[in-house]
Amino acid sequence: MCGILGYAGFKEAEPILIEGLRRLEYRGYDSAGMATLTGKHLHLRKRAGRIAELAHYLQEEPAPGCVGISHTRWATHGPATDVNAHPHLGGGGLVAVVHNGVIENYASLKRQLQAEGIVFKSDTDTEVLAQLIAKHLNGDLVEAVRKTLQLVKGTYGLAVVSPRNPEVIVGARLGSPLVVGLGEGENFLASDPSALVGLTEKVVYLQDHQLCSLSADDWHVLDQESVKVPASVHSIDWQAGDTDKGAFEHHMLKEIYEQPEVLENAMRGRLVDADASAHFGGLNLDTKQLRRADRLILTACGTSYHAAMVGEYLFEEFARIPVEVEYASEFRYRNPPITRDSIVLAITQSGETADTLAAVRESKRKGHPTLAICNVVGSSIAREADGGVYLHAGPEIGVASTKAFSSQVMTLTMLALYLGRMRHLSSIQGSQMIEEMRRLPDIIRKTLQCHDTVRAIAEKYYQVKNVLYLGRQYHYPVALEGALKLKEISYIHAEGYPAAEMKHGPIALVDAETPSVFLLPRGPIFDKVMSNLEEVKARGGPVIAVAYEDDEDVAARADEVIVIPETPEYLQPIVSVVPLQLLAYHIALLRGCDVDKPRNLAKSVTVE
Image (cartoon, helix red, strand yellow):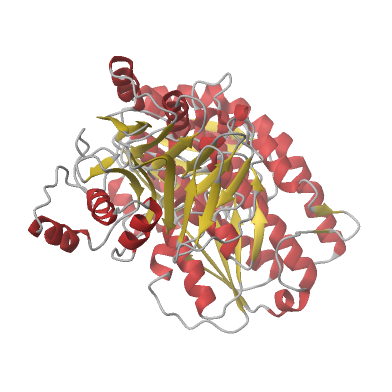
């Protein structure tokens, strides 16, 4: 959610920190700030609102110095105000702290500090950290941070500076990501490697309960006892241009159009013609374990949950393995009976989603094999799962996920092929699937030609207050995803349903002001969905249909038709979701919404 960037080097910190914060805007925030040091002088600058507000303030009141920390805040304790923005000071300016996460026992700690005469200026839990660190600071900033963290309960990714140690930044992590960036004569600290793109290619990912200390020419990773520990250096495989909008107006639109290339990247090197199967290098489970699996439990949140629902159809059809799909936020607190030969598969774009990470840890604690489908190399879930598959989708900046969904579904399709060939699927069936998957990127390119049609439909319906999305079988998860996209970025109430469930309640919502989006590519139960469409039309509801070209039956009944190319049923979700993404985008644009940074949302949900 919130973003952190710290810098210690030979350059002025302020422009580096501002540019890094801009790269973190996609995570969601409501205020921004920084603290820099020139010797023993600390300069604090922070503002509620967008980073542009902070940048304007810095033009009037610069923040000099070559060491500094900065932050974008997403409110958890207290409203979005200048006072509640980070960094927070402790000891009257003895330390400055930025913090992601939640300190669960902050209220009791705050009362204790107030009883000692300490006056608080903000409503935040983070100021408690600042005051405690200042209280424990007797010369060694690392030791002051370490002692403070022994007192707190909750989650944190934090960065601390002090005029008493003016060349040093101290960081610590528990449950909220933190990464050290390594340069020549300069080092960085960030909550997300995307903030470091263009600044460095070498990073070290902190693990839970670790601290770090960095200066311009040195860095260390430490354990809870302040003992130096070895750390692995990784490379960032993103380029500076990957986080730019390019020729597109918004990141979301760029990412929608990147989907053909994203699918090609997901398949690259993984489809094996000789075996009529797929190959994955990082599963880390042997063939016997995979063949012995009697159940898959897919766990995820948000858009990744909808991809998991598509995965349920794929695994049961092609691998003949029973599947359960669980919201990670519920699964982490349940205690369901899970057999020894069940495999838990976590699906996540960021690899830092708090609920999904907790679900992985709970599964491992109970001895179940855990796999992950993830986009971010070196993320917490990627490191902690027993094995997994990277999406290679590149950075997804738009808060509303698009290309990650397509890549997740493609990866699940390849996994279904892999497990199916391991069990009962014939080589002829496997070869046919490979051929069909390889054609998919060009099919998506053709699908994107519906853009003008979708824009015209958006102009007709952008002022409605409610929309229903309806599909069956493989298209039920797509209906849910289409509704989620509209809710996320346009703030229109939308619901997705299996089309047959309409008459069990939701049909009461149908009226002339409530359009229904039907997913109607030809398939085994096409006629059933057409009957559901007729039920909506009989009650005066407008119908927007996503269907194949030249489908006269659909054209004769729907008010609007968005045409997509013909595709095998199991690949249709990746195709039919594209016009729904574009529809949400254009409706949000017409309503004047901030498409890439919708209100109240964050890209990576790292708190519960």
